[in-house]
Image (cartoon, rainbow, N blue to C red; front, side):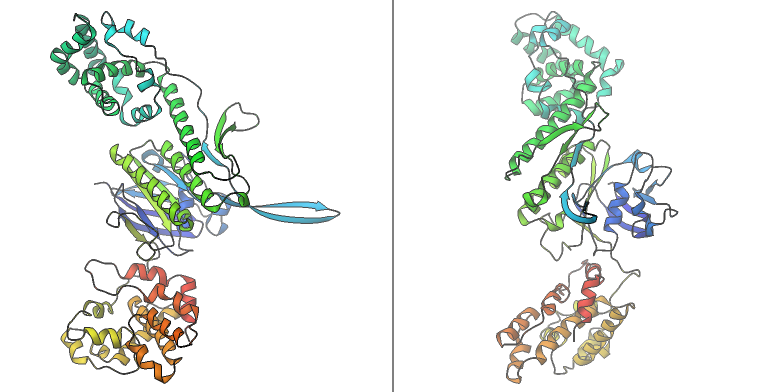
Length: 580
């Protein structure tokens, strides 16, 4: 199976030279998780800056603003590397790609009044360009009368497919995606054998129904042997449900249309009409504002006769955030779908879904899923790469099937992080120590519990065997983390939990402390303190992001990377440093 192995980015925004290895499979959601400042926007910018023949950055997007640092983007696919830089783009030869990001932009306006300059700022939603150039209006050259005459003496058996197929936007879209039109120009494989078939049919006698019965008995095998005709027939049968003979006769007409000189232009225009209809229906279905949001055909420039299709949004304060976000996203994903022509396609979705409400989150994932299903049905590869700072394993903002979702953390430690403290997690279900481990080691308790013999029995360090010694060991790792040294992330988790609980415990009256240590779960302990009139700092609750990680052992689970991703967040680190 195909694999998207890695990305290498040089000198783009905040990235000087970074390689991200993930080995993503196609047609499954690919999620890249990282705190702000770890390269998500740089990755999106690199793809957004790809031209057909090179990688071209805006001045502000060069690393450190230094225009002498030349950018590069390398995509590794099936162990083959494709490079884009300032002089070439081999990625474009092998992939289609599209970036979806937030359409909100800030604008500043200056006005001079009586010798003074007054500046005002506003937030707007950028106009979304749906179609860069509206194609020439060319209609399919189809006439059932002409086709009957072309077919010959038995042209009467042909049905009018003008409304059912030729002018049906959905069928034409399927046709464009599933049929190789070049096959119908080949004399040996199509033109010659089909002419023989038509000649044989014209020799048959009887009514239309009688001739069709004879075709089924005598000519069907010959039709089946013409591969391009058979592929087209099966597509038509799936779409219409007509009889196999009628579908072959429809196919002969469609093939004649495909061979016409204006077919490609008419096809392009019909696909455009389909896309425009989709956008208009979308805006109608999701727009409940007082504004009549709809697509507009506008000139590409004042001097150009050519036009483009756009959505112009009203002022930001006159449309809800949810409407703006989902209209923008679905419009852009439809634009991406229209632009995807190659076998392998990359869709980058840059954080826009981090801010959607629940209903729009479901809508977002629905459209991603539909796009994946479409690629699967076409035998093509889509890599939908979703950039987020919200960990799907912690926040329930993704509804995707967890077995299909592929998660990679950009904020990996520069070293390959391991944790010797995972041993205590592996052994927490040992029947002889399970209860004491939870009460004295995994949580704060002022008493010193001695489990040294059990720790030795389980091949764990003896120095951890007394609970207060264990707490001291994890506190050392917490100090390393706060100093910026190499640290054990599991130990830091323990240390944060123990410190939060210790501070809460010390705030209680003596009479309440025993009930505190006998209460299960850190949050429940904190809520117990609140019930007793003790004010708990909000930071202690917020750090549940760290200490509430599920420390129950499961084989093949990655405990380290998601935790490191959160610990490397600057705000999280600051909150932990404030525990006193």
